[in-house]
Length: 416
Image 1 (spheres, rainbow, N blue to C red):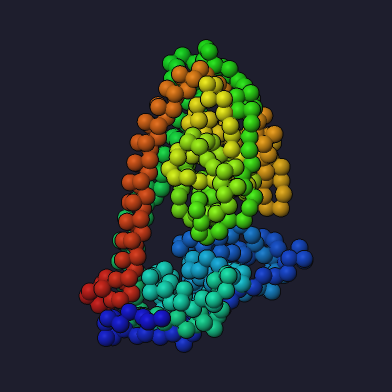
Image 2 (image 1 turned 60 degrees about the vertical axis):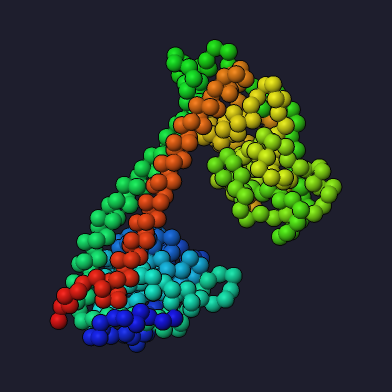
């Protein structure tokens, strides 16, 4: 839990609890509706984004605020349960819940200086090292107060904050542009899939709401009459053959990381996958139900019980065409209308799956559609990879700026 040693000699190093007031939030009783109203913003961890905060989705009434802890302006909020280290600085008085520890700066500390320091690699490393060894990461107030901070006199703190904000302003603008491009790329991907299955990708003159000549709407069961549920046997960490699960489905293909295995020869014989088998995720959260992937024979594998193997009539439907269609927004929307609900999970069984409507062109045109899609989606993949790398570089640069700031390297001409 060490603090950077190579700091200027005139800087101080102190524990949070020795220099600042640290407080843990509270939640007024929910069983009294009068505690909640429109007076004081009530902040929870999902609203902390390493940015200033001036409002919250939920608010307390005057009565509720008397039962809460209200922070003065320019206090620093830090999540200390679950996803550790999310931060905010409040621009108005706010209340906050018990998953957050807050720092009320002393007269010797500029709030923004402390806010940025709470985002620095050293502060976050200290926070992580203090986490209790439980299934959920927790840093209580007592431990939180032992985190060490580095600081010079106020004028130098303010000079450092000004330099940080100058550098981060340009960096954040660039990051925002990258994130916008990333979102636009996601929309373009779905547009490509929509055009493909409306026939517009391979036919110039297609009227809205009509299929091209030679196409028809069919139910999935007409072209894929048999579906199979996967293995329900408990898997192991090691074994002969991987068992593909719903978590391995990524963008229509299988990710071969985080595998489990089986040694059961009977299971292997029964559920062994064949090249171009299409697997449908039948049970999960609403976001994941209906995700579909195609097995390309990368290595011998079987499939788990939450997946359904769709057995095609190969002369009627191409495996890649089917996979792409089942991952469209249109297919997802249909799935949302037929899925059933359990505790925290949704389900689409084999019978409902076979009732899915699907636009069916001749097999030759299916192959053409797949070729066009893969050509364009490959370009999308390369652009997305470049964007992801640039975002990672931006985050690395941000951390470098913060590390230099709080080791005294960012502003060389110290203000005295």
